[in-house]
Length: 116
Image (cartoon, rainbow, N blue to C red; front, side, top):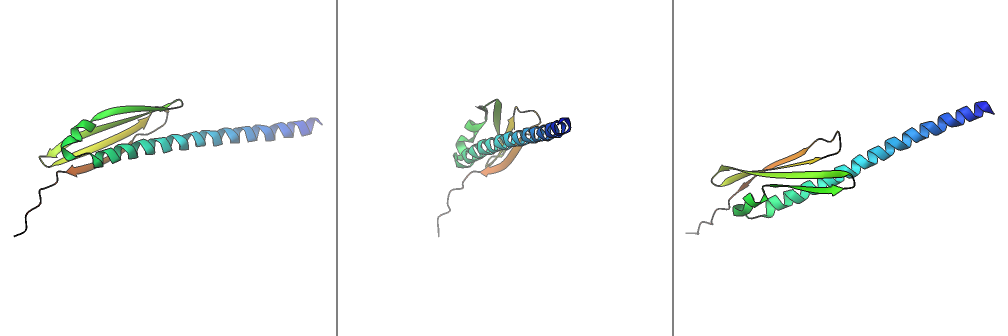
């Protein structure tokens, strides 16, 4: 009876450790999905805003999901009079999380040249 109780306890302890790992990975996947969603939202804004209004996007936003906070910062740098570089950095307050970064260039639309 005692031997079967020890074996049963070992199996239960192994399953408890496994369920903890599954819960931890599920939480990380949920956080990563939220980070990706925030990144895509900021990317859409950066590509749809008129060129002359890009500087309005330069700010940091914070959103919360459970205990995690997602911080998204957008910077706009003029590389020439007609081209600006937009950088979006999204990070989380969850320990061990790495920031995700997207950088792209936006150009001012040239006026069409009339046909001759």
